[in-house]
Image 1: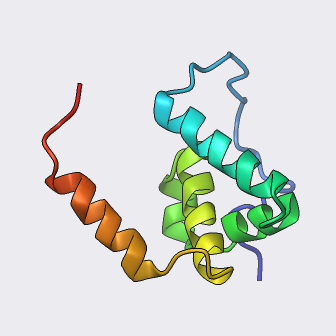
Image 2: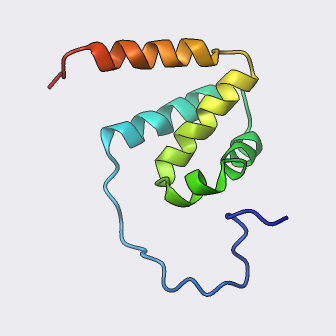
Length: 101
């Protein structure tokens, strides 16, 4: 069964090839991925597999770095680096803090 990432042969129009400014969040996701990959926690192929295993609705609606972040979360749980409860707990803590500027 083909996933949403299998686009071979489909006419999807032109590709926007202009440079895009990466947000601080995008840069942090990129840094986390490279740091953990370079330390041997996972390979680029594992990240690709995790991205391609996202539910169709997520794969089709997430921006590029949202897909990467979802993949890193999945791999961190699979590899036993963090549990789902630890991640959810930290997210709750961050949401409870006043907005920092």
